[in-house]
Image (tube, rainbow, N blue to C red; front, side, top):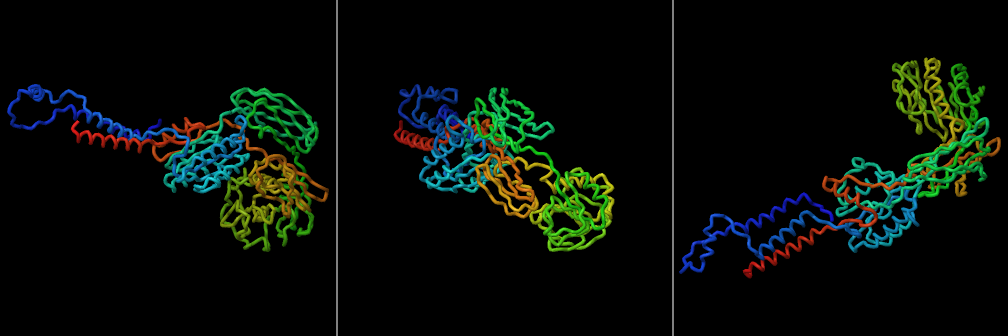
Length: 623
């Protein structure tokens, strides 16, 4: 039993007030009568000193007390848990994050949520409606305020989990906005509370009921947290970490395979509750990729028991430097930063020039962009792709526009002096990083699929090459312009946006998915930005270059946060303190049983009215 309006309990004072009225003596009227012999005892009572009389059994008193009690109960709004939906409009939110793939007996948490959601739909009344929201990477309204059960059941049946974390704040904000605009709405959330955070303040408070239905009960899960491999002089070394997220010790076996699924090494683990164990594998056989697998004795989530690792050894990239006037500072710094083989060329490149990982052009602007990323210094010519506005004298110090940009990391511009700069008009895809006197001194971005950095001043017209900031800045620039040589493709998660570095000049490119599906990439660029599908595993990028077929691997893993499958509660802020307390109490006691609450206010008020009618009838008959 819940009490929805305890603040009205002071109305119970009416009960002792009624009793006091019956204790007080009745006022009498003076009347002339023949004799008082038969009224002797009554006269004695009236003549007593005390202003009250003894409480006698009275049917009217009992009826009035019963009616008062019923009215007080109605005012404090008692409610009982119910299994059906009580709101006129129910907003049903189902969490489909990765932890909902955890096993609960013979079914997953999402399968349990689907079955219970379908049961709620079947219990909808003829005047009740439901809105169905999927709480995925982004909230998605599948069915909007429908009283038709068929589309609701079909949408619920199609719910599928993904390997990432749901955006709970966005989903609750959407549900709260709908509930605010639709009077009589209530929100029902089905999930395990994974990724739970204190949402008060982050989500606008909304009125109406909120009920959290917990789909999880187990917390035992073991996962691979880290798996990295690195070539050394003695072979390939591997480092693997196994995490136990449960409350009990975990035991099992860990195995490492190569690209051809050949067994390379194996070991066993015994990890305490909430702890981790690290394994080191020495002298692994050379392979393009490695796969680690764990086999725990008890495990709630199997999707995080496999992890891929791509060993990476930075290679030498090809860079071409063209400086008609010669630039000793630039030539020296390119020999010391990055992993580049720098070739000095004698003429400006064009679109037909051989591909390079990086082109460095000092004081010259090509009419057409060459194949490869580009570092352009002191651009003095206007072309179709470069909107040069002219040269300007600078009377202000350079200042960073985006200090947090990776290209400006540890670069101090305070002591740099620059005499002149080349002003550029707006360039789509390029953003300013350093500015002085309204002139963008450094811009970076992507044009025609090529990464590009423009230094808008002549190095000889400044003291920048003499400052410690110059080699640091050039290191950052080279690393960003040649990512294929400085870092592997990072491990990604399904559904994320990933930028793939492409080899300049490749004649054909094919991306192979873990399920064998192949996609042709026709971009004539040095990078490809794409949204990954909801598919974990190993991806392979094949490129046809002048030396043959170049294959690049990258893994797409389940989000590590979802490996902690411990069920958590979920609560939201309410518009007043009383509703907030009731919501927290309901959330704390709710599991998978009762869904909502049914107020008894109207029934109690009806019974009170009935008692008053009986009391009036009794009074009329003189009882």
